[in-house]
Length: 542
Figure 1 (cartoon, rainbow, N blue to C red):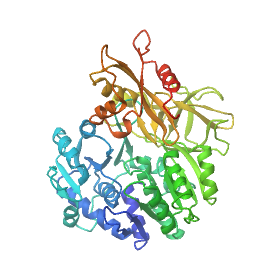
Figure 2: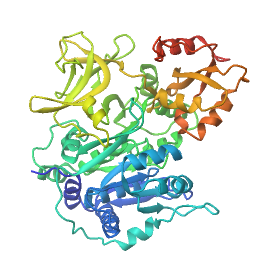
Figure 3: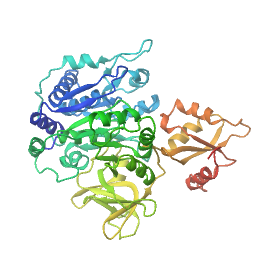
Figure 4: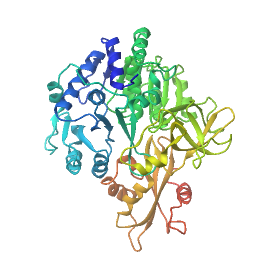
């Protein structure tokens, strides 16, 4: 039995070809909408897949998706899967140096990108030697010198609408790049069969996984429609793309917006009778509450059955506010990662008093990171998952060896989260084992920001730590020691300096000037000290 994502999608298409599959509601600049049935989405993906094959992109080669949300994003992922090309997500917030790193590290052979990124792609693409085929979505802006690229519409029009692809395999890959907690982005290599069971719940995330590939279409035929999935974060994050594919595996409807605009999200929930929304923590939930209490008061959200968060926690107080406004919705804090897929969901008593407690699946455990043996109840360890786990990190055997291991005949992945487990199997997450800053679901690695800041002529030394933030969970704070005799830079000065080197979400939002950075005798950073300094320095109005 071969579980291949393209084969599974085509089986659903054949089961319900006329059912609506994908709705895009905020088409740039026009207010228009696009609606595709399963048959129409399949045909569109076939066309692009044949174009890529005819352009010389071979099975197993990598294609980057440097795109905002839209039909083209999911169409391109499906085209890659059909042609056995490996899709690779690209963070559209990255600037030139970050893009060069990712394009090279991922060994991209092709790139599909939005015209808005013309200048960045034009600067980065020539420095990625293997990148030889570019496809542009949208028209170039007047006066902007972009790279040579095929227009997406032309690529789609030139390709055959038929399938006619060679046989596929469960071993075909899907790569998800993650910002991670240990430096530069890493590409997590998934076999499609493993991703189907770990990331997509085996076709039934809340029920019994299918026991054979053909069972997916059988369930779709028998199940009817009526569910609408709405992943609101960027599709470039693995969770949103996987949410869309969960919807496809159910043969249901998926709605996407180009960007997260709270008022438009609520209008769409009402208009399309959305049943399931996914988002990232308080940073997205709080603006929805503000809109429901303000300009969109009275919006009908009664169709909403579930609101789920991955990547950041929806806090108790914010969840309670939303629950008062939309009492029909169940709010779920899910736990998972690019390396493990889905691990579990927060328990009903999870919160400030008892901590972030999880009911995990049977493949998740807390282990001693030195021995890989399960820890005793109450003892700290690291969360790990067995069975359907990734093959490792692309182009990084060192990190692969640190993170992936075998126990007996089973493959395991060791996550960066410290936790304990009680006698009933409930896992309490203690926090990241590294110093990763989670800001609105985006992961920021302090040393990367420190390196950028140290390039400023007035900065002698710096540590970067998290400062609590009501909306984003945390924001990036910089504790800076100035060079002797240097004029004191403002936060605006340092932000302007960083903008040429870092994506916007990595730029410091707090600045603390200190006489001396505290480090250990060996020169290692003292992040506990840095956090205490940030916490003790209040901004005006705080």
